[in-house]
Image (cartoon, rainbow, N blue to C red; front, side):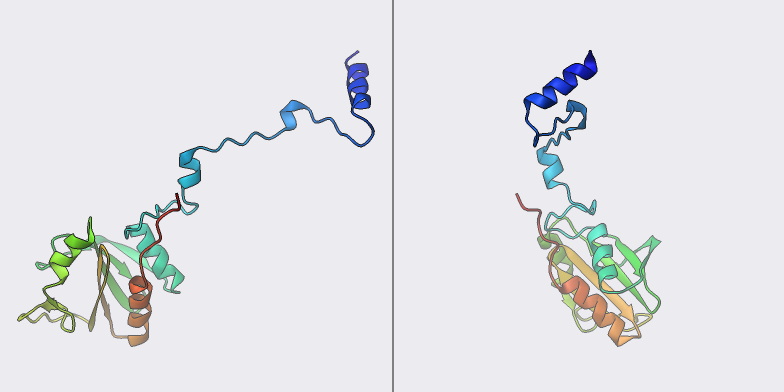
Length: 163
C-alpha cells in the first residue's frame, strides 16, 4: 500500500518532477551568532588579540612558537606575550585600548626602545612597533626577519567583522 501511494504521488507531480522525502531536505537555520562568528575562531573586533598576532606572524612566513613565561618591563604596564622564531624574539604587549598602549609607548625613545633618557642593553637589536592596542618589541640580529615581523604587525589592525 505504501509503495502504491508513493508511486501515485510521483505520478501526480508529472514526469519531470522528483519527490524528495522530508528527511532528505536540508534545513539551514541562520542566527546572528552563526553569521558573525569568524571561520578561524579568532574574533575580528578591530583590536589585536593573541590569536590575531599569531595569525599575522604565520602569514608573514614566520614559524613562531609562544613561550609560556611572559615578557616584563618596568616601562610597560602589562605583561607581554613572547613569540620565538628561529632567529628572533617578538615581545607583544596587548592593551585594552589604544589610549592605554599610548600611555606606555608615547614616552619611549623609539630608536633605543627605552624610556627617554634611559639606556637598556637588549640581548639583540630592538625594534619597536605600535598599532592601535598593540606594542611589540622585536629582538633580532637578522634585519630581514625583524623587518618581516615589523611589517606583519604594523600593517594594520585585524578588520572588524561586518554587521
